[in-house]
Image (tube, rainbow, N blue to C red; front, side, top):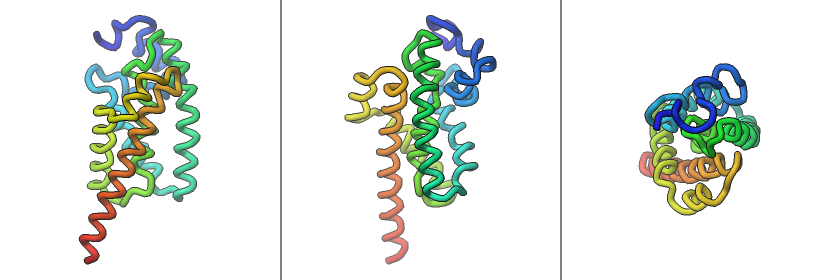
Amino acid sequence: MTLSTRQGIAPRETCWKNPVHFLAFGCGSGLTPKAPGTFGTVAAVFFYLLLQGLSLWTYLGVIVVASVLGFWLCGRTAKDLGVHDHPAIVWDEFCGFWITMIAAPAGWPWILLGFVLFRLFDIWKPWPISWLDKKVHGGIGIMVDDLVAGVFAFLCLQAIHYVYLKKVLT
């Protein structure tokens, strides 16, 4: 099914008219007909570039606010559309990617690695991500699996950076 033929309101009709939907759809990035989660994460990279210069505590604060806001944005949009976790809802990808990039090393190789790691965990959904995806509903359910995928990707990125530094410094 295409994004416009699912039950409920078509996302393209509402994205540009409703600011809640606009944000939940990742500023429109989730409206792509194929791989909306990947395109949502690409858009999250752009916003990460604007955020990466913040202090660690400010960056963490942005993630907390964006995630709490995301519980409401995603839940409200899903309810309005009449579809739980509609593929066009990608605010969860934004927050998950931003978690991946907490205290990430500077440079494009690390951004690309963070992108790949986050997408792998978001698509693969190892336990407990898969359990959360199936068992938790509403806005929290839409968000939580991506937040945990972001934590997993963060841990992998930091471990890779640690091993890389050990190798370079010895």
